[in-house]
Length: 392
Image (tube, rainbow, N blue to C red; front, side, top):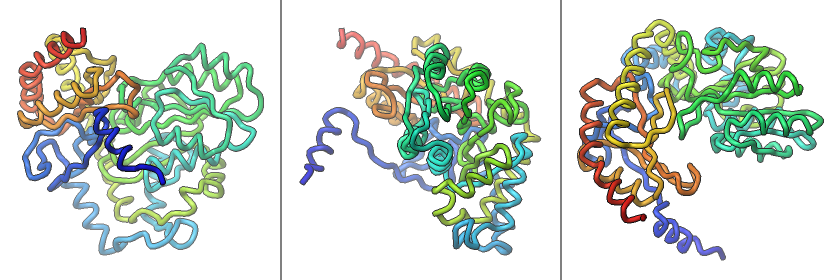
């Protein structure tokens, strides 16, 4: 029998062991973790909508009419009018012909990729794509070719020598680095080489582009340029679930073929209706994105001045590069002792030797919150200097 205990011990010795926190109360910058009040800089609630009173009210208003559970899959009797309303709303929001509502972003990527590619086909995937994309590629049973991160020259060479049905899939905003894929170049390459482009804009929707319509909309790319657009609703949108949007024909095809859509219980319809309310807020409240951007710019300027190594990101994801697993954990712990929750990210989530603190910002953070973080980082800076000296 496999020695599971030994594997767990090995993870502990390598600084890779993970534990869960118990969070009390609503998701917001000031939360309670394992009974201790902390100021959080690790949530994906980029617009501060996860506990917004209008969204909470929308759920409460919907419940008497929809009940709680979805009760069945969409293809049995689970496709509620609330789900249908949200799909129409998402199609309009993204400028696409149609949309499908999935239960999670992981399920959306798994279902879409495995439905649109199969045996004998080839999927081209960026090396830094999210785990859900990687697993979707594996599930498809297609040949998978991973191209170096955002390297359009390498991808062009791969596409040029590959025949048959080709699928190119990428994150819009990369979740651990915070950078944005070269989407226009990707669209051009896919057009030249007759490949179907799939973009997962989980971390771009709500944050980037006009009225928060995402990284694809920021560049003015149409449904013709990016035929398949995936997004999650549990990040900037503040609710739960995910979606895929694109041509009506492809959405119909996914209804027939996407196993993670067909064989799962539909999400509670009240969540779908609350998401419609959230999209209304996102469209009309540009001030949230403006405040968020000012926090990001202030942080980058001051953290760089403190001597921290930041990755090139203009999104709410602002990784502080550390390198060593134990040093990243120690820095995260030191910040926690000062009342701040900033998660250390380690392999296999990121490559070996690239452990980091993943700082994320929300429009719900105040300037005073940011100053607390910067003060704590200034006080903890000597830790990295000592770690660097010891490594030499």
